[in-house]
Length: 109
Picture (cartoon, rainbow, N blue to C red):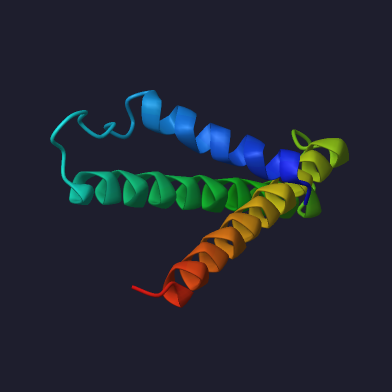
């Protein structure tokens, strides 16, 4: 996955937090806990969205295999590719977060 795709996913996560689905941290004398809760909500919502995309793709695939006339092969393929891309992006974000955590743990206080 390219750097540009990862940045795109991060930007989408930021837009979700700004759209009102997740409250932005209060400016000024806010505590670190409020920012942590917002990050937790954004991450949880993003994972739920990836899960929904994967379930939708699986549902379309099953319906196509059972002969549903309302589901076409291109529809299934697009849904499966979206699912794969969403999972790969999530995996890359996880890897970046893990790298950042490990870097912080290596810092001397």
